[in-house]
Amino acid sequence: MHEDLHQLAKMLHELDDQMVACMKCGLCQSVCPVFAETMREGDVARGKIALLENLSHEMIKDAEGVQEKLNMCLLCGSCAANCPSGVKVLDIFLKARVIVNTYMGLPPAKKAIFQGLLTKPALFNTILDVASKFQGIFTKPASEVIGSSCSRINAPIIGDRHFMPLAKKPLRKLESARNTRPGKGGYRVAFFPGCVVDKVYPKVGQAVLKALTHHEIGVYMPAGQACCGIPALASGDKESFDKLVQHNLELFEKENFDYLLTPCATCTATMHEIWPLMSGNQTQSMQERIASLSAKVMDITQFMVDVLKVALPVSGSGIKVTYHDPCHLKKSMKVFEQPRALLKSNPRVQFVEMAEADRCCGCGGSFNLQHYNVSKEIGQHKRDNIVASGAQVVATACPACMMQMSDMLSQNKDQVAVKHVMELYAETL
Image (cartoon, rainbow, N blue to C red; front, side):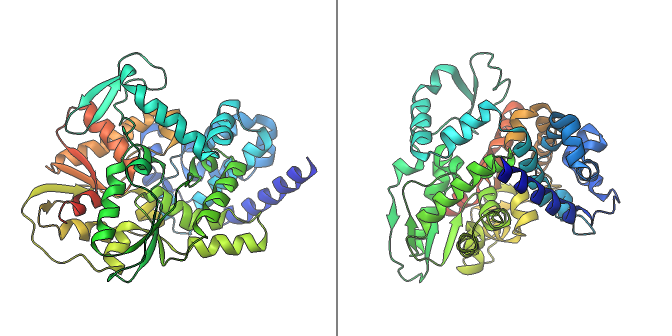
Protein backbone atom coordinates (compact mmCIF):
# COMPACT_ATOMS: atom_id res chain seq x y z
CA MET A 1 0.00 0.00 0.00
CA HIS A 2 2.83 2.39 0.89
CA GLU A 3 4.56 1.57 -2.40
CA ASP A 4 1.34 2.29 -4.33
CA LEU A 5 1.00 5.70 -2.66
CA HIS A 6 4.67 6.49 -3.35
CA GLN A 7 4.22 5.54 -7.02
CA LEU A 8 1.02 7.59 -7.21
CA ALA A 9 2.78 10.68 -5.81
CA LYS A 10 5.64 10.24 -8.27
CA MET A 11 3.26 9.97 -11.25
CA LEU A 12 1.31 13.06 -10.13
CA HIS A 13 4.56 15.03 -9.95
CA GLU A 14 5.58 13.89 -13.46
CA LEU A 15 2.16 14.89 -14.75
CA ASP A 16 2.50 18.40 -13.29
CA ASP A 17 5.85 18.85 -15.02
CA GLN A 18 4.38 17.90 -18.42
CA MET A 19 1.23 20.02 -18.20
CA VAL A 20 2.97 23.32 -17.45
CA ALA A 21 3.62 23.93 -21.16
CA CYS A 22 -0.09 24.13 -22.04
CA MET A 23 -0.97 27.78 -22.78
CA LYS A 24 -4.75 27.09 -22.95
CA CYS A 25 -4.75 28.62 -26.44
CA GLY A 26 -7.60 26.39 -27.59
CA LEU A 27 -6.13 25.33 -30.94
CA CYS A 28 -6.86 21.74 -29.92
CA GLN A 29 -10.57 22.55 -30.27
CA SER A 30 -10.26 22.91 -34.05
CA VAL A 31 -8.79 19.42 -34.55
CA CYS A 32 -10.46 17.33 -31.83
CA PRO A 33 -12.96 14.92 -33.45
CA VAL A 34 -14.82 14.40 -30.16
CA PHE A 35 -15.22 18.13 -29.49
CA ALA A 36 -16.53 18.60 -33.04
CA GLU A 37 -19.48 16.36 -32.11
CA THR A 38 -20.14 17.22 -28.45
CA MET A 39 -18.95 20.88 -28.33
CA ARG A 40 -18.11 20.36 -24.64
CA GLU A 41 -14.98 22.04 -23.26
CA GLY A 42 -14.33 19.06 -20.99
CA ASP A 43 -14.01 16.79 -24.04
CA VAL A 44 -11.10 18.70 -25.57
CA ALA A 45 -7.44 18.54 -24.52
CA ARG A 46 -7.42 22.04 -22.97
CA GLY A 47 -10.40 21.21 -20.79
CA LYS A 48 -8.96 17.90 -19.65
CA ILE A 49 -5.61 19.47 -18.80
CA ALA A 50 -7.41 22.13 -16.73
CA LEU A 51 -9.06 19.27 -14.83
CA LEU A 52 -5.79 17.39 -14.40
CA GLU A 53 -3.96 20.41 -12.99
CA ASN A 54 -5.84 19.77 -9.78
CA LEU A 55 -6.03 16.01 -10.20
CA SER A 56 -5.27 14.91 -6.63
CA HIS A 57 -8.09 17.11 -5.26
CA GLU A 58 -10.52 16.17 -8.05
CA MET A 59 -9.88 12.43 -7.53
CA ILE A 60 -10.76 12.68 -3.85
CA LYS A 61 -13.85 14.77 -4.63
CA ASP A 62 -15.18 12.79 -7.63
CA ALA A 63 -12.89 10.03 -8.91
CA GLU A 64 -15.55 8.51 -11.17
CA GLY A 65 -16.25 11.91 -12.74
CA VAL A 66 -12.55 12.38 -13.51
CA GLN A 67 -12.36 8.90 -15.00
CA GLU A 68 -15.41 9.54 -17.17
CA LYS A 69 -13.93 12.76 -18.56
CA LEU A 70 -10.57 11.11 -19.25
CA ASN A 71 -12.25 8.23 -21.08
CA MET A 72 -14.06 10.67 -23.38
CA CYS A 73 -10.99 10.74 -25.61
CA LEU A 74 -10.02 8.73 -28.70
CA LEU A 75 -6.27 9.01 -27.93
CA CYS A 76 -5.93 9.86 -31.63
CA GLY A 77 -3.17 12.41 -31.05
CA SER A 78 -4.73 15.14 -33.22
CA CYS A 79 -4.33 17.68 -30.41
CA ALA A 80 -0.69 16.79 -29.79
CA ALA A 81 0.15 16.87 -33.50
CA ASN A 82 -1.26 20.40 -33.81
CA CYS A 83 -0.16 21.86 -30.45
CA PRO A 84 2.02 24.99 -30.98
CA SER A 85 3.61 24.45 -27.56
CA GLY A 86 4.47 20.83 -28.24
CA VAL A 87 2.51 19.54 -25.25
CA LYS A 88 2.68 15.75 -25.22
CA VAL A 89 -1.04 15.34 -24.65
CA LEU A 90 -1.17 11.58 -25.31
CA ASP A 91 1.57 10.96 -22.75
CA ILE A 92 -0.33 13.07 -20.20
CA PHE A 93 -3.68 11.37 -20.76
CA LEU A 94 -2.25 7.85 -20.63
CA LYS A 95 -0.41 8.57 -17.39
CA ALA A 96 -3.50 10.27 -15.94
CA ARG A 97 -5.60 7.18 -16.67
CA VAL A 98 -3.03 5.04 -14.87
CA ILE A 99 -3.08 7.41 -11.89
CA VAL A 100 -6.88 7.38 -11.62
CA ASN A 101 -6.99 3.59 -11.99
CA THR A 102 -4.29 3.17 -9.34
CA TYR A 103 -6.40 5.29 -7.01
CA MET A 104 -9.76 3.66 -7.82
CA GLY A 105 -8.78 0.10 -8.66
CA LEU A 106 -9.69 -1.78 -11.83
CA PRO A 107 -13.41 -2.61 -12.31
CA PRO A 108 -14.14 -6.38 -12.04
CA ALA A 109 -15.09 -6.75 -15.72
CA LYS A 110 -11.90 -5.10 -16.98
CA LYS A 111 -9.85 -7.02 -14.44
CA ALA A 112 -11.26 -10.28 -15.81
CA ILE A 113 -10.56 -9.25 -19.41
CA PHE A 114 -7.08 -7.79 -18.99
CA GLN A 115 -5.59 -9.76 -16.11
CA GLY A 116 -7.59 -12.95 -16.62
CA LEU A 117 -7.42 -13.21 -20.41
CA LEU A 118 -5.24 -10.70 -22.24
CA THR A 119 -2.12 -11.46 -20.19
CA LYS A 120 -2.66 -15.19 -20.86
CA PRO A 121 -2.28 -15.45 -24.67
CA ALA A 122 -2.92 -19.21 -24.90
CA LEU A 123 -6.20 -18.97 -22.97
CA PHE A 124 -7.24 -15.81 -24.83
CA ASN A 125 -6.63 -17.49 -28.19
CA THR A 126 -8.49 -20.66 -27.19
CA ILE A 127 -11.60 -18.77 -26.10
CA LEU A 128 -11.73 -16.75 -29.33
CA ASP A 129 -11.10 -19.89 -31.42
CA VAL A 130 -14.17 -21.47 -29.81
CA ALA A 131 -16.18 -18.26 -30.26
CA SER A 132 -15.36 -18.18 -33.99
CA LYS A 133 -17.01 -21.59 -34.45
CA PHE A 134 -20.31 -20.55 -32.88
CA GLN A 135 -20.56 -16.91 -33.95
CA GLY A 136 -22.81 -17.82 -36.89
CA ILE A 137 -25.62 -18.71 -34.48
CA PHE A 138 -25.86 -15.10 -33.35
CA THR A 139 -24.80 -13.21 -36.48
CA LYS A 140 -25.82 -12.86 -40.13
CA PRO A 141 -24.08 -11.41 -43.21
CA ALA A 142 -24.49 -7.67 -43.71
CA SER A 143 -22.40 -6.85 -46.79
CA GLU A 144 -20.86 -9.18 -49.37
CA VAL A 145 -18.56 -6.44 -50.67
CA ILE A 146 -17.14 -5.66 -47.23
CA GLY A 147 -17.63 -9.04 -45.57
CA SER A 148 -19.30 -7.53 -42.52
CA SER A 149 -21.92 -9.11 -40.26
CA CYS A 150 -24.63 -7.87 -37.92
CA SER A 151 -26.39 -9.39 -34.93
CA ARG A 152 -29.45 -11.63 -35.31
CA ILE A 153 -30.64 -10.56 -31.88
CA ASN A 154 -30.83 -7.28 -29.98
CA ALA A 155 -27.52 -7.63 -28.13
CA PRO A 156 -26.73 -4.69 -25.81
CA ILE A 157 -22.99 -4.52 -26.54
CA ILE A 158 -23.31 -5.05 -30.30
CA GLY A 159 -26.37 -2.86 -30.84
CA ASP A 160 -26.82 -1.90 -34.50
CA ARG A 161 -23.15 -2.29 -35.38
CA HIS A 162 -22.01 -3.94 -38.57
CA PHE A 163 -18.87 -5.75 -37.50
CA MET A 164 -16.19 -7.93 -38.99
CA PRO A 165 -16.60 -11.54 -37.80
CA LEU A 166 -13.79 -13.54 -36.29
CA ALA A 167 -11.85 -15.36 -38.99
CA LYS A 168 -12.66 -19.06 -39.42
CA LYS A 169 -8.96 -19.69 -38.92
CA PRO A 170 -6.60 -17.17 -37.28
CA LEU A 171 -3.29 -16.28 -38.88
CA ARG A 172 -1.34 -18.39 -36.38
CA LYS A 173 -3.17 -21.49 -37.68
CA LEU A 174 -2.94 -20.55 -41.34
CA GLU A 175 0.77 -19.74 -41.14
CA SER A 176 3.07 -21.64 -38.82
CA ALA A 177 5.77 -19.94 -36.76
CA ARG A 178 8.75 -18.88 -38.88
CA ASN A 179 12.46 -18.52 -38.36
CA THR A 180 14.05 -18.18 -41.79
CA ARG A 181 17.37 -16.78 -42.90
CA PRO A 182 17.60 -13.85 -45.34
CA GLY A 183 18.03 -14.47 -49.05
CA LYS A 184 18.95 -11.92 -51.71
CA GLY A 185 16.92 -9.30 -49.84
CA GLY A 186 19.67 -9.23 -47.24
CA TYR A 187 17.46 -8.30 -44.28
CA ARG A 188 16.03 -10.36 -41.46
CA VAL A 189 12.91 -9.06 -39.75
CA ALA A 190 10.64 -10.03 -36.89
CA PHE A 191 6.93 -10.00 -37.64
CA PHE A 192 4.31 -8.93 -35.07
CA PRO A 193 0.83 -9.30 -36.68
CA GLY A 194 -1.14 -7.97 -33.70
CA CYS A 195 -4.40 -9.30 -32.25
CA VAL A 196 -6.85 -7.94 -34.84
CA VAL A 197 -4.83 -9.16 -37.82
CA ASP A 198 -4.41 -12.58 -36.23
CA LYS A 199 -8.06 -13.04 -35.26
CA VAL A 200 -10.07 -10.93 -37.74
CA TYR A 201 -7.91 -10.08 -40.76
CA PRO A 202 -5.49 -13.01 -41.29
CA LYS A 203 -5.38 -12.14 -45.01
CA VAL A 204 -3.46 -9.00 -44.06
CA GLY A 205 -0.85 -11.07 -42.24
CA GLN A 206 -0.62 -13.46 -45.18
CA ALA A 207 -0.14 -10.53 -47.56
CA VAL A 208 2.77 -9.27 -45.48
CA LEU A 209 4.38 -12.72 -45.37
CA LYS A 210 3.88 -13.11 -49.13
CA ALA A 211 5.61 -9.79 -49.76
CA LEU A 212 8.52 -10.59 -47.44
CA THR A 213 8.96 -14.01 -49.06
CA HIS A 214 8.85 -12.46 -52.54
CA HIS A 215 11.65 -10.06 -51.62
CA GLU A 216 13.63 -12.87 -49.94
CA ILE A 217 13.57 -11.34 -46.48
CA GLY A 218 14.32 -13.60 -43.54
CA VAL A 219 11.38 -13.74 -41.12
CA TYR A 220 11.23 -14.47 -37.39
CA MET A 221 7.58 -14.94 -36.41
CA PRO A 222 7.53 -16.74 -33.06
CA ALA A 223 4.50 -18.59 -31.71
CA GLY A 224 2.88 -17.38 -28.51
CA GLN A 225 2.83 -13.63 -29.22
CA ALA A 226 0.70 -11.52 -26.89
CA CYS A 227 -1.19 -8.25 -27.28
CA CYS A 228 0.98 -5.12 -27.56
CA GLY A 229 -0.69 -3.89 -24.36
CA ILE A 230 -2.47 -0.72 -25.47
CA PRO A 231 -6.02 -1.88 -24.57
CA ALA A 232 -4.95 -2.44 -20.96
CA LEU A 233 -2.94 0.77 -20.72
CA ALA A 234 -5.73 2.86 -22.27
CA SER A 235 -7.94 1.60 -19.44
CA GLY A 236 -5.29 2.53 -16.86
CA ASP A 237 -4.16 -1.03 -16.16
CA LYS A 238 -0.40 -0.53 -16.01
CA GLU A 239 0.15 -3.90 -14.31
CA SER A 240 -1.27 -5.88 -17.24
CA PHE A 241 0.50 -3.59 -19.72
CA ASP A 242 3.88 -4.31 -18.06
CA LYS A 243 3.22 -8.07 -18.17
CA LEU A 244 2.40 -7.97 -21.87
CA VAL A 245 5.48 -5.88 -22.67
CA GLN A 246 7.71 -8.30 -20.76
CA HIS A 247 6.10 -11.33 -22.44
CA ASN A 248 6.70 -10.00 -25.95
CA LEU A 249 10.13 -8.63 -25.06
CA GLU A 250 11.35 -12.04 -23.90
CA LEU A 251 9.87 -13.68 -26.99
CA PHE A 252 11.56 -11.40 -29.52
CA GLU A 253 14.88 -11.16 -27.69
CA LYS A 254 15.54 -14.82 -28.52
CA GLU A 255 16.66 -13.97 -32.06
CA ASN A 256 18.58 -11.24 -33.86
CA PHE A 257 16.91 -9.21 -36.61
CA ASP A 258 17.15 -5.82 -38.30
CA TYR A 259 13.56 -4.60 -37.85
CA LEU A 260 10.40 -5.58 -36.02
CA LEU A 261 7.54 -5.05 -38.48
CA THR A 262 3.83 -4.69 -37.83
CA PRO A 263 0.86 -4.09 -40.19
CA CYS A 264 -1.07 -2.34 -37.39
CA ALA A 265 -0.58 1.38 -36.85
CA THR A 266 -1.65 1.15 -33.22
CA CYS A 267 0.76 -1.70 -32.45
CA THR A 268 3.56 0.16 -34.23
CA ALA A 269 3.05 3.36 -32.23
CA THR A 270 2.56 1.45 -28.97
CA MET A 271 5.72 -0.60 -29.30
CA HIS A 272 7.87 2.18 -30.73
CA GLU A 273 6.66 5.14 -28.66
CA ILE A 274 4.64 4.01 -25.64
CA TRP A 275 6.67 1.02 -24.48
CA PRO A 276 9.72 3.17 -23.64
CA LEU A 277 7.53 6.06 -22.45
CA MET A 278 5.83 3.92 -19.80
CA SER A 279 8.94 2.01 -18.70
CA GLY A 280 9.93 4.50 -16.00
CA ASN A 281 8.90 2.15 -13.18
CA GLN A 282 11.17 -0.61 -14.52
CA THR A 283 14.78 -1.36 -13.62
CA GLN A 284 17.49 0.38 -15.65
CA SER A 285 18.31 -2.92 -17.33
CA MET A 286 14.69 -3.50 -18.35
CA GLN A 287 14.37 0.08 -19.64
CA GLU A 288 17.42 -0.45 -21.83
CA ARG A 289 16.03 -3.74 -23.17
CA ILE A 290 12.71 -2.14 -24.00
CA ALA A 291 14.40 0.82 -25.68
CA SER A 292 16.58 -1.50 -27.76
CA LEU A 293 13.63 -3.48 -29.11
CA SER A 294 11.38 -0.43 -29.54
CA ALA A 295 13.98 1.25 -31.72
CA LYS A 296 13.64 -1.58 -34.25
CA VAL A 297 9.85 -1.31 -34.58
CA MET A 298 8.67 -0.12 -38.00
CA ASP A 299 5.43 -0.04 -39.97
CA ILE A 300 5.42 -2.55 -42.83
CA THR A 301 4.70 0.08 -45.51
CA GLN A 302 7.61 2.17 -44.24
CA PHE A 303 9.87 -0.87 -44.54
CA MET A 304 8.71 -1.66 -48.06
CA VAL A 305 9.29 1.88 -49.32
CA ASP A 306 12.12 3.32 -47.21
CA VAL A 307 14.20 0.16 -46.79
CA LEU A 308 13.38 -2.07 -49.76
CA LYS A 309 12.73 0.85 -52.16
CA VAL A 310 9.96 -1.10 -53.90
CA ALA A 311 7.74 1.84 -54.86
CA LEU A 312 8.34 2.84 -58.47
CA PRO A 313 6.50 5.60 -60.40
CA VAL A 314 3.81 3.74 -62.34
CA SER A 315 0.68 5.30 -63.80
CA GLY A 316 -2.14 3.05 -62.62
CA SER A 317 -5.40 2.72 -64.52
CA GLY A 318 -7.25 0.06 -62.57
CA ILE A 319 -9.75 0.30 -59.74
CA LYS A 320 -10.10 3.59 -57.92
CA VAL A 321 -8.50 3.42 -54.48
CA THR A 322 -8.38 6.09 -51.79
CA TYR A 323 -6.38 6.08 -48.57
CA HIS A 324 -7.26 6.80 -44.94
CA ASP A 325 -4.43 7.92 -42.65
CA PRO A 326 -4.52 6.02 -39.34
CA CYS A 327 -4.02 8.54 -36.53
CA HIS A 328 -1.27 6.59 -34.79
CA LEU A 329 0.65 6.13 -38.03
CA LYS A 330 0.58 9.71 -39.31
CA LYS A 331 0.35 11.74 -36.10
CA SER A 332 2.59 9.59 -33.89
CA MET A 333 4.95 7.89 -36.34
CA LYS A 334 4.92 10.56 -39.12
CA VAL A 335 4.34 7.82 -41.71
CA PHE A 336 1.95 8.88 -44.47
CA GLU A 337 3.88 9.16 -47.74
CA GLN A 338 4.98 5.50 -47.78
CA PRO A 339 1.56 3.81 -47.95
CA ARG A 340 0.52 6.26 -50.67
CA ALA A 341 3.72 5.47 -52.59
CA LEU A 342 2.85 1.76 -52.52
CA LEU A 343 -0.64 2.49 -53.81
CA LYS A 344 0.47 4.95 -56.49
CA SER A 345 3.08 2.50 -57.79
CA ASN A 346 0.48 -0.26 -58.13
CA PRO A 347 -0.38 -0.76 -61.83
CA ARG A 348 -3.80 -2.13 -60.85
CA VAL A 349 -4.70 0.98 -58.88
CA GLN A 350 -5.90 4.45 -59.84
CA PHE A 351 -5.19 6.43 -56.70
CA VAL A 352 -7.57 9.19 -55.62
CA GLU A 353 -7.06 11.33 -52.54
CA MET A 354 -10.10 11.78 -50.31
CA ALA A 355 -10.88 14.98 -48.43
CA GLU A 356 -9.60 15.09 -44.85
CA ALA A 357 -7.71 11.82 -45.30
CA ASP A 358 -6.07 12.20 -41.89
CA ARG A 359 -9.30 12.95 -40.03
CA CYS A 360 -9.86 10.36 -37.28
CA CYS A 361 -12.27 7.56 -38.20
CA GLY A 362 -13.68 7.52 -34.66
CA CYS A 363 -12.71 4.02 -33.56
CA GLY A 364 -10.34 4.63 -30.65
CA GLY A 365 -10.43 1.02 -29.41
CA SER A 366 -12.48 0.90 -26.21
CA PHE A 367 -13.89 4.37 -27.02
CA ASN A 368 -16.00 2.66 -29.68
CA LEU A 369 -17.46 0.36 -27.01
CA GLN A 370 -18.03 3.01 -24.35
CA HIS A 371 -19.20 5.90 -26.54
CA TYR A 372 -20.54 4.29 -29.71
CA ASN A 373 -22.95 7.10 -30.59
CA VAL A 374 -20.13 9.66 -30.71
CA SER A 375 -17.83 7.15 -32.42
CA LYS A 376 -20.49 6.56 -35.07
CA GLU A 377 -21.00 10.29 -35.70
CA ILE A 378 -17.26 10.75 -36.23
CA GLY A 379 -17.15 7.65 -38.42
CA GLN A 380 -19.98 8.97 -40.58
CA HIS A 381 -17.81 11.96 -41.60
CA LYS A 382 -15.11 9.54 -42.71
CA ARG A 383 -17.67 7.47 -44.64
CA ASP A 384 -18.95 10.58 -46.41
CA ASN A 385 -15.43 11.53 -47.53
CA ILE A 386 -14.71 8.01 -48.75
CA VAL A 387 -17.89 7.89 -50.85
CA ALA A 388 -17.35 11.43 -52.18
CA SER A 389 -13.93 10.38 -53.53
CA GLY A 390 -15.60 7.95 -55.92
CA ALA A 391 -13.26 5.16 -54.84
CA GLN A 392 -14.19 1.50 -55.15
CA VAL A 393 -11.75 0.58 -52.40
CA VAL A 394 -10.60 2.43 -49.31
CA ALA A 395 -7.16 1.31 -48.16
CA THR A 396 -5.45 1.95 -44.86
CA ALA A 397 -2.68 0.56 -42.67
CA CYS A 398 -4.57 -0.14 -39.44
CA PRO A 399 -6.96 -3.05 -38.83
CA ALA A 400 -8.89 -1.09 -36.18
CA CYS A 401 -9.58 1.65 -38.74
CA MET A 402 -10.62 -1.08 -41.18
CA MET A 403 -13.21 -2.32 -38.69
CA GLN A 404 -14.62 1.16 -38.09
CA MET A 405 -14.83 2.07 -41.78
CA SER A 406 -16.39 -1.31 -42.56
CA ASP A 407 -19.09 -0.62 -39.98
CA MET A 408 -19.91 2.80 -41.39
CA LEU A 409 -19.84 1.78 -45.06
CA SER A 410 -21.83 -1.39 -44.42
CA GLN A 411 -24.55 0.42 -42.46
CA ASN A 412 -24.91 2.89 -45.32
CA LYS A 413 -25.07 0.03 -47.86
CA ASP A 414 -22.08 1.46 -49.74
CA GLN A 415 -20.39 -0.75 -52.31
CA VAL A 416 -16.88 0.18 -51.22
CA ALA A 417 -14.41 -2.51 -50.19
CA VAL A 418 -12.03 -1.99 -47.26
CA LYS A 419 -8.48 -3.32 -47.60
CA HIS A 420 -5.04 -3.01 -46.09
CA VAL A 421 -2.41 -1.42 -48.31
CA MET A 422 -0.38 -4.63 -48.15
CA GLU A 423 -3.28 -6.70 -49.46
CA LEU A 424 -3.36 -4.60 -52.62
CA TYR A 425 0.42 -4.79 -52.94
CA ALA A 426 0.50 -8.56 -52.47
CA GLU A 427 -2.07 -9.01 -55.24
CA THR A 428 0.52 -7.73 -57.75
CA LEU A 429 3.14 -10.34 -56.81
